[in-house]
Image (cartoon, rainbow, N blue to C red; front, side, top):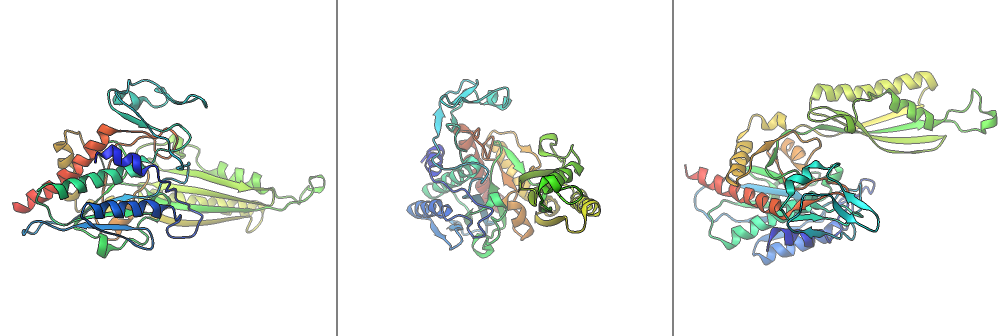
Length: 408
């Protein structure tokens, strides 16, 4: 089956994760896609299973008597909780003309070249978009489709290879993908996540990441008699945010620049809760960012009274470069495979994280490969058929290169 046809089937299944559920998987609907994938793998003659946490583990046995390193390819089942993934209405625009794309004429939703200049580079390709009311799900169902196409090609063609493992994880979008990852079933000598980014993208650096929960405890009283008594937690929350460096937000940073991201604020006069994402590639700067939040807390508590501001910080994942830098063969292999596919390797730091970051710290070297997707997590998400085909080709090239190098 063609990669894009697989993809169009997968995105029909809503797999949105939920950071507030407290369950694993965070949503039962992720199992709906997991079951489909297990059956598809079995239909291809590949051993596959889904565990109780919604992890899919599959294995293609080696077909060579020589010792060839084991490879693992990993993608995630869930889509971002930031936007709806239900009832996705995808549209394929053949021979895309490189101009503005009207996603939804009734609602006036247009993907404009002025907002997304990269669209010009996709002219002539088959562009896959939504109707603007949901995300597309290329993050990461494109990665799943590309791995599945690679797997089908391997089992239907006489290509020598070592053992190949395939793992589809739940809850990557909420930072919990590797939480219950079984390294006995999904372990390998070399591994790659296939998760987002332009075709040819190779990532082995990512943010150090933490989440901060801020609670502001106020005092509510009738505004007519509030003098010297009321503490408006909403205003204190605004003051807290105002203490943070205004140049360190996602909208003002790029490359290796870190940020604070206020992604949730909810409250009233008496109590306000805020949630921040803290991100930085450099560990020392990362520590300083976290400490700055504590200093802001202490300053406001001195001003408004003890326990007015509470700060809880939890580390999420760390920069995998610190481990991979000593085992760069896993990156060099991806570079060579990308060139074989006729693509120019694009090596960039991830301004985010993947399952691979945490898995690398668990002992499974796991840089990330692009899937060809753009504008993840929102209504303007898109991808092309051609990009997905190239990404599948890169995966096959990695398998063949590992086999070839084992002969030497």
